[in-house]
Image (cartoon, one colour):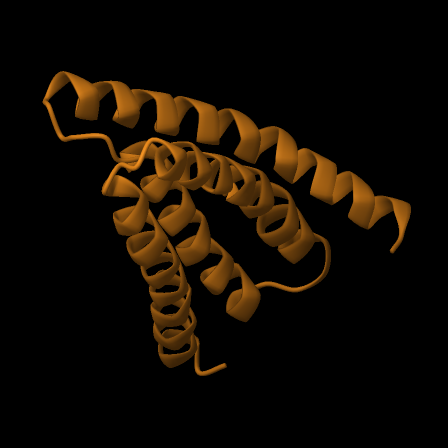
Length: 126
């Protein structure tokens, strides 16, 4: 890895991390206010969105731009550690939303990435 790629990753992270915070907190507050139950809706949205974007970036970008968007921005936008903490916390409280998160989050994220890769390849001929 060169310094220019490391800088691209850092710049992407500086974009993705605040995006995650703003999107996750806004959606989570809205879901709580509307009574959508004890589920990490904001976390689901940022992880699915990041999975979709990384699929697009993987197919359509190369070099520093791929590093900036895929590794930096999408890496900072998505969060496995917050997902793991949520599941462990609700599991210890014996809430059914733990099972929902265990099942829904990986399927939605892997599906979003797969769809993004397939659609981007079809659109670009890559």
